Image 1: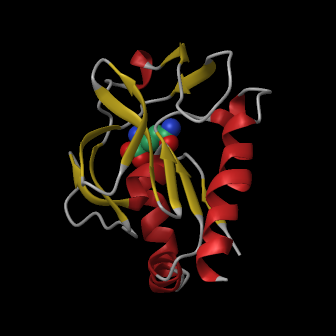
Image 2: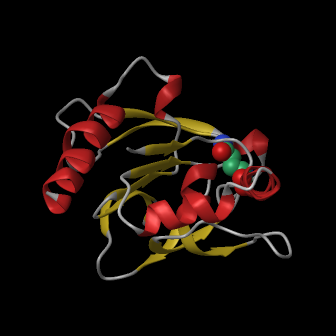
Length: 160
Ligand code: GLN
């Protein structure tokens, strides 16, 4: 009914999806409106276009953004910060960025929900939601709640 694509390593996830015969199935389901949330590598896999990709790197796509892999630097440059995220009630969200991407540019249907130094790090476009950071590493479930209570609910209304 819905899918969360977690963090990890985007090139590995797409290669595994190919070798298990899941790639086209997942891409097709996303395209046909399945609510989908991607964090970090998951965001990269949802982007229609990526910068600093490896040669031949594929994405499921669906999200009209250009994502830059490893944009904040190497693994040692990973960081945490309190982030204002549109759609979440106070306090700010403790966002954990692990060799994270940022979003270089967005299409006009894409709503930017959070930014770091002028770069989008949380976005929503209809049934697709993505963050550069890892909300599952905190005890705070507001990002997952937003996906279930806002993005998935809206998608059910659209298809009803
Ligand atoms: N740097 C990883 C990639 O390009 C993403 C890191 C993460 O998911 N924490 O796929």
